[in-house]
Amino acid sequence: MYTAKKDRYNGKMPFSFCGKSGLQLPKIALGMWHNFGDMDDFDNAEKIARTAFDNGITHFDLANGYGPGPGAAETTFGKILKNGLDKYRDEMIISTKAGYKMWEGPYQDGGSRKYLMSSIDQSLKRMGLDYVDIFYSHRYDPNTPLDETASALSDIVKQGKALYVGISNYPVEETRKMLWLLAEKHTPCLIYQGKYNMFVREAEQGLFDVLQESGVGFIAFSPLAQGILSDKYMNGIPKNSRAANPNGFLQREEITPEVMDKVMRLNEIATKRGQTLSQMALAWVLRKEIVCTALVGVSSPQQLKINMKAAENTTFSEEESLLIKEILG
Ligand SMILES: NC(=O)c1ccc[n+]([C@@H]2O[C@H](COP(=O)([O-])OP(=O)(O)OC[C@H]3O[C@@H](n4cnc5c(N)ncnc54)[C@H](OP(=O)(O)O)[C@@H]3O)[C@@H](O)[C@H]2O)c1
Image (cartoon, rainbow, N blue to C red; front, side, top):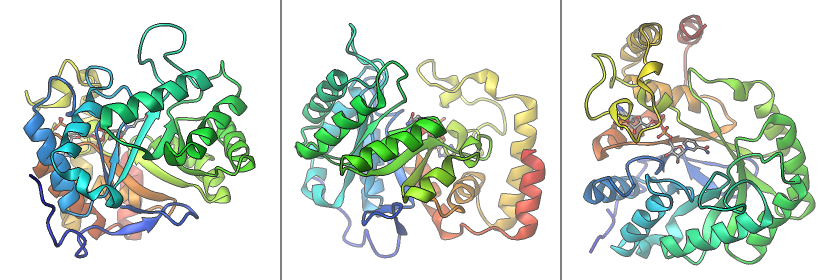
C-alpha cells in the first residue's frame, strides 16, 4: 500500500492562487489525456501519479473521454486512488470534464444539461469519488444555450458533485458571457483551461484580458506542444513517442524541418539558461501572471521529474525574450 513521501511540500513545487479565488494550484499539474488508457502500462501510470504527488503536484486533470477507451483514464485513476492515493484525497485537486463525444445517441456530446448531469455521475463512479474539485464544460457548444450549460454547472456544484467549475476551449466572446452567467448563479468560474505554448499563442489575443478582468485563472494545456518542445524529436521520431503512437493525437506531419529548426534554436537558449528545452517551454508559459499552472502530460516518471524543475526559473531577460520572439515569428 502506498504511503506518500513525508517531504512532499518541502519547497519542491511552488503554488499560486488561481485567479482571485482562494484555491492554490501547483505551478505544474499532471494531465491524463495520454498514457492512462486501456492499452497503457498500469504500473507506469501509477508510478507517474505517485511521483507527482510525492513531489508536491496536487492537481490531476482528467476528462470523461480520456483513454484510449472512453472513460479508461478515469477508471485507471480510480484504481490508483484505491491503491493508497485516496488516503490523501483532501490534499488533491481532481478535475474532470464533459463536452466531447462519449457514448452513442443524442445525449453524448456538447453542453446540454442532460449530458453534463449524466457525465459527472459516470465520472464519479469510474473514479470512485464523491466529488471532483473542478468540473469543466470541455467546449463551447453552439447548439445549446449558454444559460443551460451554466445552470447545469451551477447545479452540479450545488449538488455537491463538484467544488468549483471551469470552462475550456471557449471563444473569447462566449467566455465573457459564460463568466457573467456563472457569476449571476453564484457559482463563479474558477478557471479556464486552454491550449497555450510557444507555438500556439491565441490566448494572448483577448482571452487573457477577459479572464484577468474577471479574476479567473488560466491553466495551460499542451504546454510542450505534445512533446515537440522537448528534446524528444531532435534526432527523428523515436518508436516510443506520441508521434509514432497510432493512438496518439500528435501527427508525424506536424514535425516538419521548419518546426525542428525553431526547436533547435530554442534549445540553444534553453541550454544557456541552464534548462532543458521542456523546462524552458514550461517556464515560458508560466512567465505570465494569469497562467497559474502548466498542465503537462508525461509518459514516464523521469519526464515529470525533469519538467517539475521548470518552476524554479520562470523569468526571462529582455535579451532572451527578444531572441525567443524572433525565433517564434
Ligand atoms: N481541455 C482540453 O481540451 C485539453 C486538450 C488537450 C490536453 N488537455 C490536458 O492537458 C494535459 C497535457 O496535454 P499534453 O499531454 O498534450 O501536454 P504536453 O505536456 O504538451 O505533451 C506531453 C507529451 O510530451 C512529451 N514529454 C513530456 N515531458 C517530456 C520531457 N521532459 N522530455 C521529452 N518529452 C516529454 C511526452 O510525449 P511522449 O509520449 O512522446 O514521451 C508527453 O506525453 C492533458 O493530459 C490533459 O489533461 C486538455
